[in-house]
Image 1 (cartoon, one colour):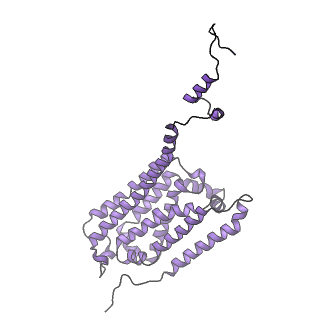
Image 2 (tube, one colour; image 1 turned 120 degrees about the horizontal axis):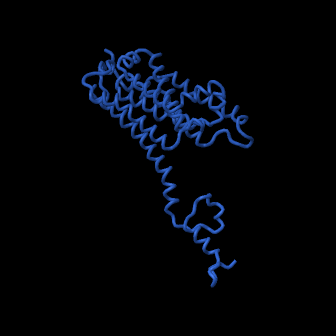
Image 3 (cartoon, helix red, strand yellow; image 1 turned 30 degrees about the vertical axis):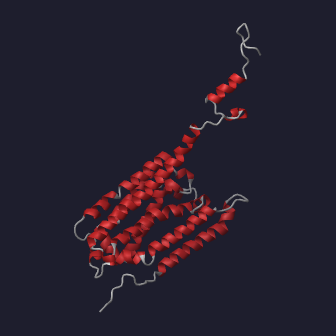
Length: 306
């Protein structure tokens, strides 16, 4: 009799090789190429780059190794959905924030590859590619085949991560000319939270087993039925991604507009010497008061004295 243990430890050597390769490549590029790619005295990377890179590697390892990978691929589709959330919403922005501008420019150059990448990073192209990949990766026939087909399984994950990087590039990519404005970014991220509601709603209200391999397991993890598992997967897909994207939108709103609000509603007097800093065409109460203070009152003839 074969004992089924969902929590048995499994070694995924390919994950450790991938993470080790990425760490080694990043270290080599920063230490060897970085000093000659920046101006003299300038550091190739910042502390934020390092922190984001470490977080990205931890997230990549956690999403691709035991136990999340094994539970998500063999027992719970909700675990598989959590894995996809980590690879598409959380990992890509960290990876982009970890990449300094000189590093990406060194890799893509300024020729045809740059032009292709710029076109792919256009918000419309990037958004369509990412959401089409998300939709395709949830088609039952493809999911069922990927469970028993290793190359297809890794190809789906690779496609999700690559298109997610393109999707996040206009928001936080290292190349400034690929970015879009604050207002456009908020609308863009909101739209990214709308499309996943289609497969999420389908999973939530589906009757019966949608993905065959997850309904054939001899043991249910945490006692979840197939229907409970599918509904939990739909909730993770909808609320997890949406809450993350909406949190970024709210943060951007307050960062962009709260500073203007504070400046417009302060009652501090501007120093007299600050008049030169006032942009042309603007005039406030303090400016008018200073003009009156420096203008002589009229004499008996009604003409101001010099």
